[in-house]
Length: 426
Image (tube, rainbow, N blue to C red; front, side, top):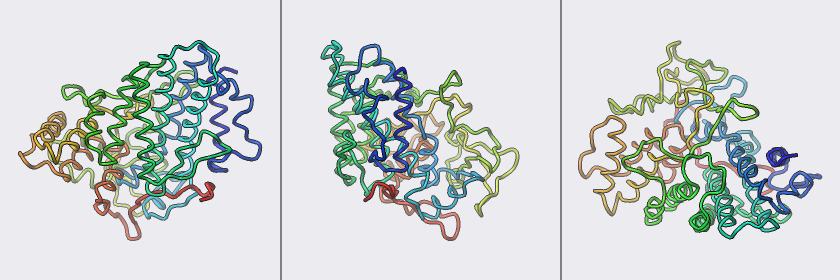
């Protein structure tokens, strides 16, 4: 069995998280023959397959994850006739701690964390003559991906906290609160950056930017959540941020129709029916500035509005991805420029205006008036620049503006955070 297949078996084993929480019980042995060659010593020929497996598994349940965050953030409505919870639980705020919209992305992200931990364990135990530089590159890669996955889970559970120490399934760390977990994640990213600076990229890298640039970009995002704007700026200096560059420059998940690879499940054809559709929230369409080309991410339905679940008939489809093999951004230049604006907004407003105007120019808009860059301006630009990429709910929450989310029907409510999964035993 090759290493890619071993990681697939590992992932299926870790789907036990859906039933058993983070503990692996009832005969599920993560030290069994499926994973022993990884954890007991990764070899040079195995390494690129392990790295490829980790990158591939980062995509698992990505569609569910993005849909969940976008629905609670009122970026769009998700219609699926076979499952009314998209327009029920997630919009009424009555959340089930054992429902797919929580447990599947939760388990998928921790599966990748486990794979990273196995790689780190295998590096410690290897008899292969990796140089110190190579070891640093491997450690830096594994810890960067692990930190990113943990940050994704933390964004969902927020003040409920997460487990950051899950290396030993028989001795799991306790839940860390939001602030503590965020500090742990940033510490992991900073440590990984030191390794990547010394070791460079491990192969393969299909993201589109170096692993160090990706690390510093994610660090800037996490530091903004923490309100640590000096770290935001220093991390951006080492990232791929480019004021003269394309807004879509960045790190991406890749998809293809080849072999056993995965398709982009965030793609739906235009005029999709209620069986499976993503409908741009009317407020996104109606609140845009005239001439804002970012509104092109919502396309008018030529087959007519979709009327489901007592919601105002939806007139526009979400149309960010035009095929099932389009890549999905993990983090890109446009977000980094907006993080630069945010970090400078109070202490260096001229720089903030410059950055905002770079983004607005790319969107076909006039510059802002001098002295007008504030939280509302920042949140407008982030809303339209990062539409349906999983940011608005997090942004409004961290700026204490969740009450700005539109309530579409009587009985709807705003979600602040997701519960700890039922089988975590908390």
